[in-house]
Length: 459
Image (tube, rainbow, N blue to C red):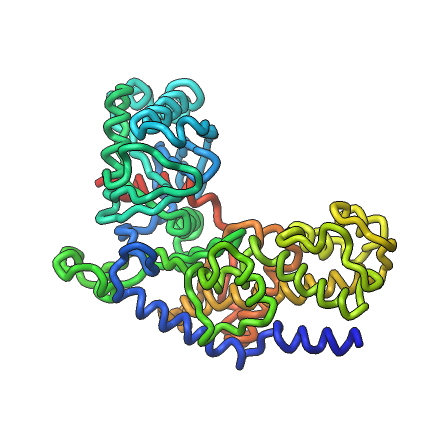
């Protein structure tokens, strides 16, 4: 009975080349559609207005700012050449009062932090003239909230979310809000670029390896960026496109997290159940199949079926496991990391949040770990579609080397994920092409990438 249930699970979850084909084709169509469809509201294939990648030999000191839902990170980044950097970061968390108060007060708080970094924490990374404010410091802003961007350094603030309800900011230009705060605090700092973290990831990796052509974030969410010919970005007004010399490439934030629909994604009953239980059903379907935020819940749903079939934990659902989202992806990672030497004590330590009627057996642990492996392997194969489709979109197959910069907890810290991703690419391309694909760990797109884009866009 166990073997039959696993056979059904593997049939639904494991992706052959034939099963990958409609997904790769679906992504190709998403790229075409997104390049034509104006970037208003929820959009894909968003132009970054960044038309340069670093060569790796640039030098100088720059600032970056990365604001997410929880933390503000401001970094002083010294580019040392030869792809090397020195970074000093200041991290702070806004109070609830700041997140819901006057916009001007919030940006003043950021400006105070920038001033502290320049004058107190990291003056040794800048010239004396920069510290004194006699020379302008360039800033790249990674703003993890919706912005209607119209140029590399211009973008209208949209409704923020994530607990932010700043007053008198929506509809205002983000760069203007920063500049006004910098002037109030007597700071000679200029916003040179507003960027997405995935674009920043590609730029950051290109500094260490100028051959990089794809940036991929594979973490609690998933997204990618790549350079596209400006003439192919039909959504941009022709007057804007014509400002760029022929052959110019612009970095695109693909927003693959919102790709996908039932017509080409191989959704299982578990994917449908997860989606139905989510507070945003029918949204980010692909991401729900592949990213770290969701893999644990898929495992939980499958495990419940095994328990009901009396094939796991003595047929009794442990207390706590019946709760939605109670099995995080970190548990999967821990089980797979211990797979070769997993004993009952280690297993119980990993599963200590649940209360069992009977002590789980080694067979229970092996079954649960096998479920984790199946779900994680499908994740890697689905993530490979982002890389494979962007290689084809850029027609890179004839290149002697294809460099992909990847960052994110799911790729970097989940056991065997890198090997599984490479195995998936081999399934699609074969060994000869896959051997040319270099999957390299990318550095922080929000800090290093932000500073690099500020440098590239200062002229």
